[in-house]
Amino acid sequence: MAGLVPAIHDVMRGTASQIVDARHKAGHDAQIPGDVMPTNLRRMLGRLFGLAPESKASRTAKLIAWTTGGQPVWTPRDLAALAREGFAKNAIVYRAVRMIAEAAASVPLFLFEGEREVDAHPLLDLLARPNPMQCGPDLLEAWYGHLMVAGNAYLEAVSVGSTVRELHALRPDRMKVVPGADGWPQAYDYTVGGQTVRFEQETGGVRPILHMALFHPLNDHYGLSPLEPAATAVDLHNAAGAWNKALLDNSACPSGALVYSAKEGQLSPEQFDRLKAELEASFQGAKNAGRPLLLEGGLDWKAMAFSPKDMDFISAKHVAAREVALALGVPPMLLGIPGDNTYSNYAEANRSFWRQTVLPLVNRTAKALSGWLAPAFAGTASPPARGFELRPDLDAIEALSTEREALWERVRQSDFLTVNEKRAAVGYGALPGGDQLAGAPQQ
Image (cartoon, rainbow, N blue to C red; front, side):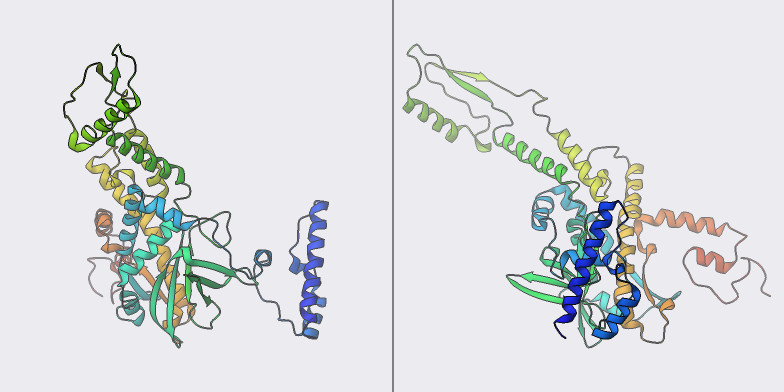
């Protein structure tokens, strides 16, 4: 009997694939294999062979799961190459990723139960000191940095019993997704030095791994790194820098040529090698800049230079840098790229950077952490609808202070709002007796 159940599953899969292929050839819409077998027959086989009952799941999840067969799915790119060429060797990428990671990690997170703010809680203590080696901003900076470089970020929850004691950021280049039968990740494999540790996601408590991925239209499990669309611009920027350095090592252009015009004919090989060695030893490099050249009989110096068009690599670097900044979501002027660098434009670019790049990442991370960790701390007193939720403290962001001041001024001048309505508009809780217009006498 034990060998019959897998055989039945194989028959079901084979029959389903034949039906799907036939419908494709006939021009019909394909049905997923799970819907081919009639419901009554499925229930009868389930009672006969002890098959697990059906549960709610996406109708396409089984197709995704069958393509992997429960095996680890490798990321389709070389993350080490992205980090090495894009982050470690490119100043624009390095600064942009650091700006995003440091800014997002600096935003404080508040804990709310429903609409009530919780000032002291073990979840806040965990986020403030996630592990003995890092504080909260250090962990989140690594989280955001991995997300921007690799398109994926992973957090590990270390639990003792049902209590989460530590959080650790894991490197994306070492992680592999292991899809389950429903198409969703059932485990994660973390490999270092040939040793692999598997994190099973179905533990009955807090899942050991939190995986957040940027949108990827062609991958079911991994996110798209912002450096992939900007790969050409990154390579161009790096190549322009290497080219300019080579030109600088050669005085920015071939400074000239020695022409031998004696009547005796050409230089002998020994004379040519000696002259070349003397030039390299005595006249090349920064320490020999401007040194006079003593010529022997028959030698003439012909000055040479590249045209300004041939030497114009700065504009090409700036164009490439703008494309890189665009892909990462950082205004070019914040990275020192020439443009309309006035004070008003800089302030507006800074607000745009926070609103369009930093805050969406912070809000998404806060919701992901809430859904991942809050159930372990909520207990049974709070229903799911009023569970714990992490929210960013927007009042702590200095770049948005002008927007906050304008909001407070508009609220202050809104005489048609009650006191509690004004407080709610600026993010504060209600006060007893505040359901009346400001300035109205107490009843």
